[in-house]
Length: 509
Image (cartoon, one colour):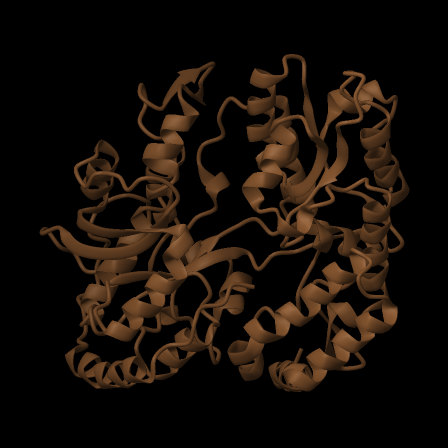
């Protein structure tokens, strides 16, 4: 779970002062259609011939684009806006949000990665951000956003922003299918099959170079793949309802079984031995450099692995599998349905009429024409049409000029762009992602708030994470694991259980 540093008290006091001013300045806007034409239907967003001046703070993954780029010009023309975008590197985004909120110098649209963090909750409850729930019905695209996901971002039962939609279940096992053929195995269907694949990829010279230089599974210090294995084992997705109360996943016996599975892989050297110090890029390098045969991650990464491996190792091939049968059947951990939330500060969005215009911008950028611009780029430069479908001319250029920056403005799913000419692998995992919603296990705490979890979660989580890693590495035994759980309980964990349980009971579920 992402956690930001706490907000300075002086900043919160300043925000409290903003609320009154914002409330006094708020006025009623004219009820009309969105500022710029687009989807069929009517909207109560006010009409404006002058472009909306919209300041936005969002993240980026590469170099910031130029404000006069052709992509930005097309966005501004279509949505009738003049954008002033503050691009912040992903690596420092959390800190920048904290500093910006504390300063009181806020953009009109602020991307917040976790709207349940303590500083954001405090700001919401201090009246810093606009409640947008009552307005959503008036916009053709916003009104169609998933209400269940809006439930997940609610604070005290109200909606204070627009979520960036994501598919519920995208994780699976990405593996070298050419290696699988070399070791004489089929795609895994059970946990035993999966273990046998990892073992063969480690011991049976899958790359046929006569050297013992491969490993079955690569992982990283955050252990992204562990949650998938735990879910297949039958463990809850972070939390479960047990005897009418909320209980964390690591108290479930199935979670410990997943730890034992990982320990077996480590003891037999079927998993990268230095995984506790690896980051995501190093994990990717293990696959791309032919060192590891499988990774448990977002299946969308499969296309990138395929493209990279094909250049370095001609004849290499990549495949994916997501439905591994465990003791309780086919299961995968479900996500929250979103990644980050755009929120609108009252100190900078001073009137209801202006709020409606800004909501109109996000509604317009959800039109198919904009989704295709953000997803594909500019025809003739980033993509072309083949057999009636778009296909990238230079996907790296598109990612640099559009995907790593402007795509972060999109609130619809990344898969909402027009379906292009895809590889068989892309078609396969695209189908899997949709079908896997049926087996996605929900986290019942998604719409709930525990004050202790909010304020102390960043202290509590490492207690369990570190003990899990130590158990897998053989540095502690089961008794040591149980001691860590007791430490978590005494450090505030029992209070988290109590608060989540009370919230759950209050919700009437």
